[in-house]
Image (cartoon, rainbow, N blue to C red; front, side, top):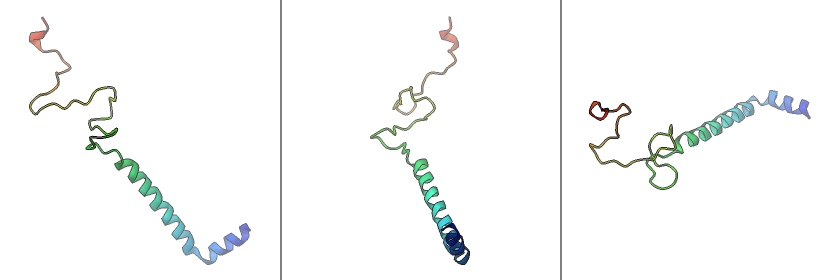
Length: 79
């Protein structure tokens, strides 16, 4: 059976190229879906936006002009 398969591939190499290109396209599509599947603009579900570095931190919806406090304490607050 293996000998028959090898003879068929030798006689019809275009099927090997077709199979390889289909496998590449399927793997590329799956990788694209995983890469673009995390929609950070989605308000529903698990997206939520923000960075994925610290998942324990809450995602804050701050108004424009308001920022989080700095990591380094301000000089007037140290004494």
